[in-house]
Image (tube, rainbow, N blue to C red):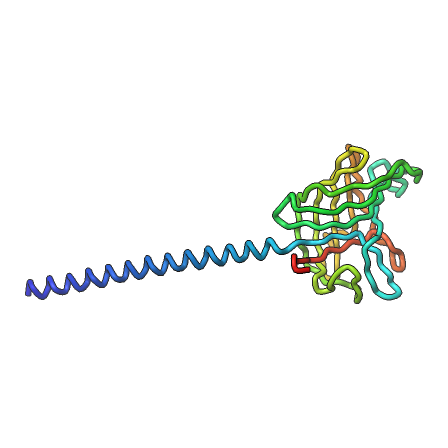
Length: 223
């Protein structure tokens, strides 16, 4: 009986050893596969970037194009609550890579006006850094897109650091609201320039009014 018991113990020991070896092999293979999967996702993500545009819309044909204007107002409205405020008006477009603050391009033109509507100054600005990007749900409302593929249109919010050609610095916020986007997401831009915050975006006018509209497109290196 002792010999039988000893034999059975050796069998159990061999089975346990084989089970542990198999488990270690399985875990090792799983780790390799997960590492490959994550690296593939990272590589794929590196191929993706987003384009932003302040757009122009031809409502007679339902077509959006680059080259629009968008404005925002400051806090010095006279009388209070009116639209007689200092204002900044921008054109622009650019691109960024989510998760990489330095992978940015683009810029545009700027003009500022005082609260009487008189022109102050103007020039060019360039994007220097990505601060934050957040995609939002939504589908494009127009049938024709001269910037990219309609299927690649996105709603969302991007915050960018910008540099003006007069030496001042600022932040540009581009927000796009599409069909089905929550109404907490606004359409248009806000911007700061030096110590002035043009925080109150101008809403898009009713069609055929053509201002204060934006869009995003997802693009890849293959594009």
